[in-house]
Image 1: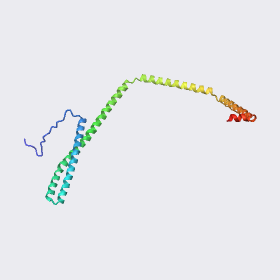
Image 2: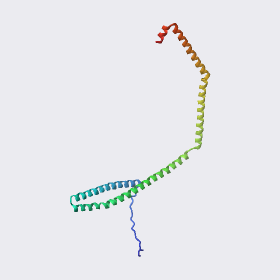
Image 3: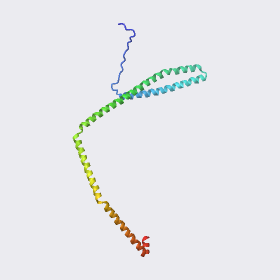
Image 4: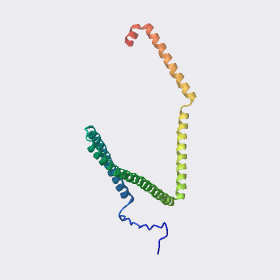
Length: 198
C-alpha cells in the first residue's frame, strides 16, 4: 500500500525501566546527575575562557594563524555546552516535579492514615464511661468547694472583727501601762534606768 501524503511512520522506542526503581531512588539518581552536569558545565566554561585567552595571547604575539585555529577550537565547545545546558534544565524540571509528587503523595498518605487512626480511636470511645467520668469530676469538684467553704467559714468565725478589735484595745492598754510605769521609774531611779538603757 502507498503512504498518504504527509504521513510519517515513527518508530516507537521502548524505554527500559528498572523494576526496582522507586520515586526516592529515581529522585536521588536525578540529583546526582544534575550535580555531575553542573560540575561538567563549569569545567567546560572554564576551558572555553582559557581558550579565548589563548586566542588573544596568540593575536597579541602576532601569530594570526594560531589565533584563528584556537578560536575554531573554542567554537567547538559551544555545541556540547548548549546540549548539556538543555539537559540540565530538563533534569532540574523533572527533579522538581518528582519531588513535588513525592511530597504530595506522602501528605495524602499521612492524611488518610490520620483519618483512619481517628476513626479507630473514636470507635474505642465509650460515651457512657465519659459521662460517668464527667459526673465523678463534678462530684469531686463539689466536695472540694464544700471543704474550702468550711475552712473559710471556720477562719471567719475564729476571727470576728469585734473580738479582734477588743484584742487590739487590750494590747494598746497594756503598752500604755508599761510606758507609764517606765516613766515613773525613770523619775525615781534614773541611774537604774540609765543602766538598763545601755
